[in-house]
Image (cartoon, rainbow, N blue to C red; front, side, top):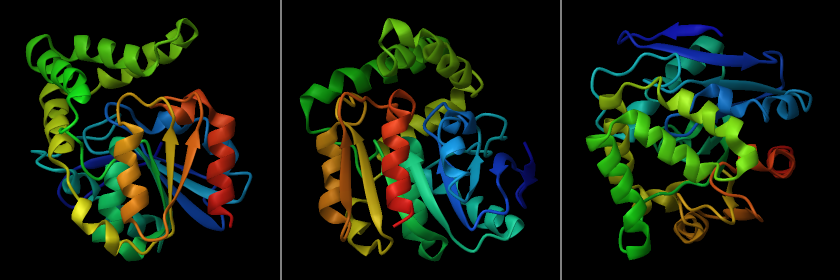
Length: 264
């Protein structure tokens, strides 16, 4: 895995597969995860002719963290420099969960870098008006501030991968989360809680696909509906019987939907 040292002394590790591909797909992972979470998508994208670039976001995986993380916008500042280094003029941008908020921010702040936009189980603004969402958000906030990252990791992994046959996936996610410094993870959670680009969605010009897991209990499908309604000409694909980690739970359906959209 190559790494890039940015001008402000942040080291970014990234996967760069099929560098001779005719177009680039930038894959942005979720909270606590890293570039390895896309291992089921890379074998589908590269044979189709795509160059795949999947970074560990600052502070996650093997990338060093920012000195202080205040907002999601700070997590994408490395991308223009990464593109310059790799001689990428623009890419199809795919982001899941936290990575989806980064993808949205990139499309808004650096629209020329984004050819097509794929937003997976993510949001423009969390809906705290729904009382049914409060217990889980409150639980996560309490755990990370009271019982620490290890307990938080176990609870999150259990919610995302609840089935007995998903035990290996749970352990992989727990291991990924535990690589993050607890204070940095808390900062990322605050940044996600305050993320709000809902009033800017109408300015997105890139063709956009929203992929939703029907049974996502982390980001409600109703919250994801805002993206469909406010981004011009956006479309939505709902994958039945899939939860928040839809790209891992149902990779064949996910990859088919993704490739159909990117290759139109």
